[in-house]
Picture 1 (tube, rainbow, N blue to C red):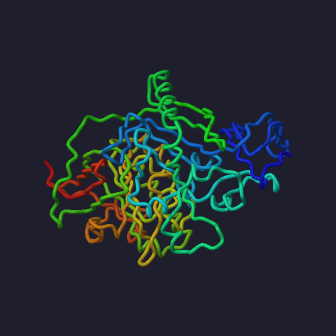
Picture 2 (cartoon, rainbow, N blue to C red; picture 1 turned 30 degrees about the vertical axis):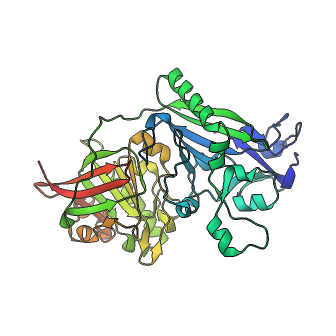
Length: 431
């Protein structure tokens, strides 16, 4: 069996769990057959640094971002954290023409929504496992940690750390500023796009050595279809308070647009927060039925709002739906409240990033305490709940699920300006 420093080796696997690239091993080392059912020789010395999925898409969050340049999702360690969905962590979203720009405002938010865990193979235990990034750094692995991570100066000052352990935050910022990695990725993406004659979705690995040199391995490439709408005026109108349903000023991912919404499906946070785990799964299944009621007729434009993370596998963190259960939704909103006094971490679109892009779905992360954000709870509680009519078997859950449709002579409109990170949903007269 291969031995590496601290018994950690970073290996990237493809969709069939075959090794794609690895590091942390000396040339000529092998991995035992009982671990990966294969033998790997002449492995690159160094380590597996980052793995990502790249999308050439129109999801932007800043006026300085060029949608045609493409975007990346990066993770440190095994690429499983970029491809699979994890409830307890985040990926780094990068605009290829402006890699220094974060979707979050300020370093505190960047640190909060940074990747914390790394997927690894522990050769000593012969297991696939996860470890906190800070633990890997503490174990003395010869990583050029400053290339991948930034110091949280606020925490460093507050803890008066005497152990020498530093509060690293995975930002990848110096990968972009000190190497040609971004330029290489843009060139590769552009080449593939021209070859396919279409937008592409790729998976790749990048292995960095201590001298900041690296090797990029293309693992997978497939063409994707992305809806391109005409340029529209997405200036946000002033809305009278009594007509305002929702207003958010951050956490918006997708394409700027104006929509007429046929149906609002709202999972009431406090009611949901008091349910048992079993009942939360019941709510998830009902949501799936509600979003697929009109499959054989003209589909309705649906906006789905609920507490915590949509698509979580842990009901205490949100609503455990699969993407197949909500793939007919046009707007997906996560609310950072589960019940009074309990704040939920949002996914910021990382759960379903690829799906959001392909389905042209708008994501809204609603932060209750952010200045300027408004959620009109009275609207949801006072509007007629159509749940018993559209799904009679779910009528017992009318206190948890609210299905709201616009009355005659009215309509629900959404206006989203992603560049300015503003969105409003409001009641308007039907034209």
